[in-house]
Image (tube, rainbow over all chains, first blue to last red; front, side):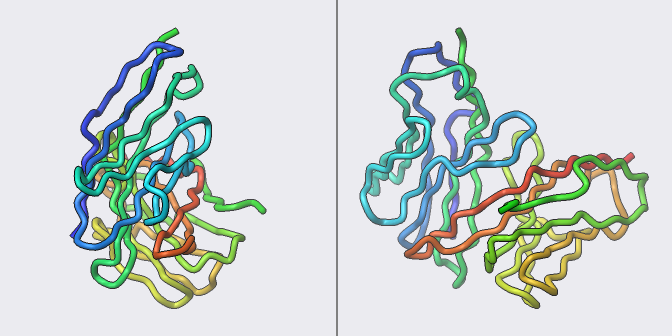
Length: 115
Length: 115
Protein backbone atom coordinates (compact mmCIF):
# COMPACT_ATOMS: atom_id res chain seq x y z
CA UNK A 1 0.00 0.00 0.00
CA UNK A 2 1.14 3.53 -0.65
CA UNK A 3 0.40 6.79 1.08
CA UNK A 4 1.65 10.36 1.09
CA UNK A 5 1.59 13.04 3.77
CA UNK A 6 2.11 16.70 3.11
CA UNK A 7 3.24 18.03 6.44
CA UNK A 8 1.95 21.60 6.07
CA UNK A 9 -1.46 22.65 4.83
CA UNK A 10 -0.25 26.26 4.42
CA UNK A 11 3.20 27.78 3.96
CA UNK A 12 3.72 31.53 3.98
CA UNK A 13 6.91 33.18 2.67
CA UNK A 14 8.09 36.60 1.56
CA UNK A 15 9.01 37.23 -2.04
CA UNK A 16 12.69 36.49 -2.60
CA UNK A 17 13.03 34.06 0.34
CA UNK A 18 13.44 30.27 0.06
CA UNK A 19 10.51 27.90 -0.26
CA UNK A 20 10.27 24.48 1.42
CA UNK A 21 7.19 22.28 0.99
CA UNK A 22 7.45 18.99 2.85
CA UNK A 23 6.26 15.60 1.68
CA UNK A 24 6.70 12.17 3.28
CA UNK A 25 5.63 8.98 1.58
CA UNK A 26 5.08 5.32 2.31
CA UNK A 27 5.50 2.65 -0.31
CA UNK A 28 6.08 -1.11 -0.38
CA UNK A 29 7.75 -0.90 -3.78
CA UNK A 30 10.17 1.40 -5.53
CA UNK A 31 7.97 4.46 -5.85
CA UNK A 32 7.64 7.13 -8.47
CA UNK A 33 7.07 10.55 -6.96
CA UNK A 34 5.65 13.72 -8.45
CA UNK A 35 4.93 17.30 -7.52
CA UNK A 36 2.05 19.09 -9.25
CA UNK A 37 1.04 22.74 -9.00
CA UNK A 38 -2.48 24.14 -9.25
CA UNK A 39 -3.04 27.84 -9.72
CA UNK A 40 -6.44 29.23 -8.69
CA UNK A 41 -9.31 27.90 -10.80
CA UNK A 42 -6.93 25.93 -13.02
CA UNK A 43 -6.07 22.31 -13.60
CA UNK A 44 -2.93 20.65 -12.28
CA UNK A 45 0.44 20.96 -13.99
CA UNK A 46 3.44 18.71 -13.47
CA UNK A 47 6.36 20.46 -11.73
CA UNK A 48 8.78 17.55 -11.54
CA UNK A 49 9.03 13.78 -11.15
CA UNK A 50 11.33 11.17 -9.62
CA UNK A 51 11.56 7.76 -11.27
CA UNK A 52 14.54 6.01 -9.61
CA UNK A 53 17.19 7.87 -11.58
CA UNK A 54 18.98 10.88 -10.04
CA UNK A 55 17.80 11.58 -6.51
CA UNK A 56 17.93 15.36 -7.00
CA UNK A 57 15.29 16.30 -9.51
CA UNK A 58 14.99 19.66 -11.20
CA UNK A 59 11.65 20.91 -12.44
CA UNK A 60 10.09 23.92 -14.05
CA UNK A 61 10.19 27.48 -12.71
CA UNK A 62 13.29 26.88 -10.57
CA UNK A 63 11.80 24.19 -8.34
CA UNK A 64 13.65 21.07 -7.33
CA UNK A 65 13.11 18.11 -5.02
CA UNK A 66 15.37 15.52 -3.44
CA UNK A 67 14.37 11.90 -2.99
CA UNK A 68 15.65 10.61 0.37
CA UNK A 69 14.87 6.93 0.77
CA UNK A 70 16.19 6.72 4.34
CA UNK A 71 13.85 9.50 5.41
CA UNK A 72 11.00 8.54 3.01
CA UNK A 73 10.82 12.17 1.99
CA UNK A 74 10.49 14.12 -1.23
CA UNK A 75 10.53 17.77 -0.19
CA UNK A 76 10.06 20.54 -2.77
CA UNK A 77 12.34 23.58 -2.65
CA UNK A 78 13.00 26.81 -4.48
CA UNK A 79 15.80 29.24 -3.60
CA UNK A 80 13.79 32.43 -4.11
CA UNK A 81 10.01 32.72 -4.13
CA UNK A 82 8.19 34.78 -6.73
CA UNK A 83 4.69 36.18 -6.43
CA UNK A 84 3.61 33.92 -9.31
CA UNK A 85 4.52 30.84 -7.20
CA UNK A 86 1.44 31.38 -5.03
CA UNK A 87 -0.63 28.25 -5.67
CA UNK A 88 -1.64 24.85 -4.30
CA UNK A 89 1.03 22.13 -4.49
CA UNK A 90 0.37 18.41 -4.46
CA UNK A 91 2.80 15.60 -3.75
CA UNK A 92 1.89 12.31 -5.44
CA UNK A 93 3.22 8.78 -4.99
CA UNK A 94 2.77 5.91 -7.41
CA UNK A 95 4.05 2.36 -7.20
CA UNK A 96 3.34 -1.05 -8.66
CA UNK A 97 1.40 -2.40 -5.69
CA UNK A 98 -1.67 -4.26 -6.86
CA UNK A 99 -0.19 -4.60 -10.33
CA UNK A 100 -1.02 -1.11 -11.51
CA UNK A 101 0.35 2.36 -11.01
CA UNK A 102 -2.58 4.12 -9.40
CA UNK A 103 -1.34 7.39 -7.91
CA UNK A 104 -2.15 8.64 -4.43
CA UNK A 105 -2.36 12.38 -3.86
CA UNK A 106 -1.43 14.29 -0.76
CA UNK A 107 -3.96 16.75 0.60
CA UNK A 108 -2.07 19.72 -0.77
CA UNK A 109 -0.04 22.65 0.56
CA UNK A 110 -1.14 26.18 -0.12
CA UNK A 111 1.85 28.45 -0.76
CA UNK A 112 1.26 32.09 0.09
CA UNK A 113 3.83 34.63 -1.10
CA UNK A 114 3.91 38.08 0.50
CA UNK A 115 5.39 41.11 -1.32
CA UNK B 1 -2.74 19.39 -29.55
CA UNK B 2 -5.67 20.45 -27.38
CA UNK B 3 -4.48 18.12 -24.60
CA UNK B 4 -7.28 17.13 -22.20
CA UNK B 5 -10.59 18.91 -22.65
CA UNK B 6 -13.59 18.84 -20.33
CA UNK B 7 -17.14 20.05 -20.77
CA UNK B 8 -19.02 21.74 -19.28
CA UNK B 9 -16.90 24.11 -17.17
CA UNK B 10 -19.75 24.80 -14.75
CA UNK B 11 -22.97 22.93 -14.00
CA UNK B 12 -25.78 23.26 -11.47
CA UNK B 13 -28.03 20.25 -10.90
CA UNK B 14 -31.00 19.55 -8.71
CA UNK B 15 -30.94 16.54 -6.42
CA UNK B 16 -31.93 13.42 -8.35
CA UNK B 17 -31.02 14.72 -11.80
CA UNK B 18 -28.54 12.86 -13.96
CA UNK B 19 -25.84 14.19 -16.24
CA UNK B 20 -22.65 13.28 -18.06
CA UNK B 21 -19.35 15.09 -17.72
CA UNK B 22 -17.37 14.85 -20.93
CA UNK B 23 -13.62 14.28 -21.18
CA UNK B 24 -11.51 13.91 -24.31
CA UNK B 25 -7.77 13.69 -24.99
CA UNK B 26 -5.88 13.85 -28.26
CA UNK B 27 -2.51 12.51 -27.08
CA UNK B 28 -3.28 8.80 -27.64
CA UNK B 29 -2.72 8.08 -23.94
CA UNK B 30 -3.69 4.66 -22.65
CA UNK B 31 -4.67 5.69 -19.15
CA UNK B 32 -7.52 8.04 -18.27
CA UNK B 33 -8.86 8.91 -14.85
CA UNK B 34 -11.54 10.92 -13.12
CA UNK B 35 -10.88 12.71 -9.83
CA UNK B 36 -12.91 14.87 -7.54
CA UNK B 37 -11.34 17.69 -5.57
CA UNK B 38 -12.82 18.87 -2.29
CA UNK B 39 -11.30 21.44 0.08
CA UNK B 40 -8.59 19.93 2.27
CA UNK B 41 -8.97 16.48 0.69
CA UNK B 42 -6.58 16.66 -2.24
CA UNK B 43 -7.70 14.73 -5.31
CA UNK B 44 -9.54 11.45 -4.90
CA UNK B 45 -9.79 8.92 -7.68
CA UNK B 46 -13.32 8.05 -8.80
CA UNK B 47 -12.78 5.70 -11.77
CA UNK B 48 -9.98 4.98 -14.15
CA UNK B 49 -9.36 3.19 -17.43
CA UNK B 50 -6.24 1.45 -18.70
CA UNK B 51 -7.48 1.30 -22.29
CA UNK B 52 -10.57 1.23 -24.48
CA UNK B 53 -13.13 -1.18 -23.07
CA UNK B 54 -11.42 -1.48 -19.67
CA UNK B 55 -12.48 0.49 -16.60
CA UNK B 56 -12.08 0.05 -12.87
CA UNK B 57 -13.13 1.69 -9.63
CA UNK B 58 -11.01 4.10 -7.68
CA UNK B 59 -11.29 5.30 -4.11
CA UNK B 60 -14.75 6.96 -4.31
CA UNK B 61 -16.79 5.30 -7.12
CA UNK B 62 -20.28 5.26 -5.57
CA UNK B 63 -22.83 7.27 -7.53
CA UNK B 64 -20.71 7.45 -10.67
CA UNK B 65 -20.44 5.35 -13.84
CA UNK B 66 -17.88 5.42 -16.62
CA UNK B 67 -17.30 3.79 -19.97
CA UNK B 68 -14.40 3.87 -22.43
CA UNK B 69 -15.48 3.00 -25.95
CA UNK B 70 -12.60 4.85 -27.62
CA UNK B 71 -9.06 5.80 -26.63
CA UNK B 72 -9.96 9.50 -26.81
CA UNK B 73 -13.14 9.74 -24.72
CA UNK B 74 -13.89 8.94 -21.08
CA UNK B 75 -17.27 10.31 -19.93
CA UNK B 76 -18.35 10.33 -16.29
CA UNK B 77 -22.02 9.80 -15.55
CA UNK B 78 -23.81 10.91 -12.41
CA UNK B 79 -26.84 8.66 -12.14
CA UNK B 80 -28.85 10.54 -9.50
CA UNK B 81 -27.11 13.66 -8.27
CA UNK B 82 -26.77 14.27 -4.52
CA UNK B 83 -25.52 17.37 -2.66
CA UNK B 84 -22.48 15.31 -1.54
CA UNK B 85 -21.38 15.26 -5.18
CA UNK B 86 -20.87 19.01 -5.20
CA UNK B 87 -17.22 19.24 -6.11
CA UNK B 88 -14.69 20.10 -8.79
CA UNK B 89 -14.09 17.21 -11.17
CA UNK B 90 -10.86 16.70 -13.05
CA UNK B 91 -10.15 14.33 -15.88
CA UNK B 92 -6.57 13.22 -16.52
CA UNK B 93 -4.79 11.16 -19.12
CA UNK B 94 -1.41 9.56 -18.72
CA UNK B 95 1.35 7.50 -20.25
CA UNK B 96 4.30 5.68 -18.82
CA UNK B 97 7.37 7.88 -18.81
CA UNK B 98 9.59 4.93 -17.98
CA UNK B 99 10.04 2.62 -15.01
CA UNK B 100 6.32 2.66 -14.28
CA UNK B 101 6.00 6.40 -13.74
CA UNK B 102 2.65 7.52 -15.12
CA UNK B 103 2.91 11.26 -15.70
CA UNK B 104 -0.58 12.74 -15.79
CA UNK B 105 -2.05 15.55 -17.88
CA UNK B 106 -5.09 17.26 -16.41
CA UNK B 107 -8.08 18.97 -17.93
CA UNK B 108 -9.25 22.38 -16.67
CA UNK B 109 -11.99 20.92 -14.47
CA UNK B 110 -15.77 20.99 -14.16
CA UNK B 111 -17.26 22.79 -11.19
CA UNK B 112 -20.49 20.99 -10.21
CA UNK B 113 -23.05 22.21 -7.70
CA UNK B 114 -25.95 20.01 -6.63
CA UNK B 115 -28.80 21.78 -4.85
